[in-house]
Length: 117
Image 1 (cartoon, rainbow, N blue to C red):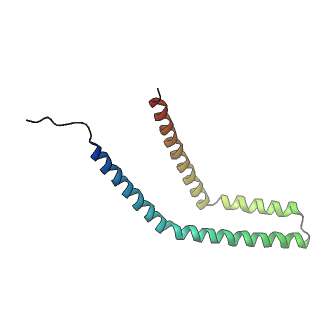
Image 2: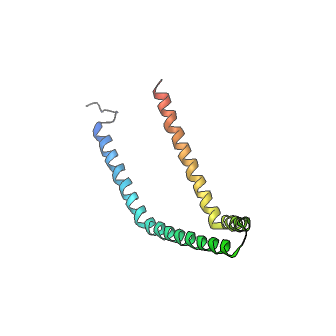
């Protein structure tokens, strides 16, 4: 009866690392394939909005409207845009991503601190 090694072999680590790398590459490719068109569409829409806003501000100022009136209108429009459900969902998602990143960073730095002792 031979004794079995309970420790992990270096081959197991290599296979696990290769599997994780393949998974990461596959997920990154799928994410890029699905989200890249949406990102490009959003970028183009953002450029269109900036151009329309610039023309609107230039026209308002050339007509003789006060700069403070223009800034007040722009501020109200920006606040109204941030009060929509979509904007709230995006902000909530960003807060969630930031919290997860902070948690991961804390774990990473905490493990380095313990290993340096």
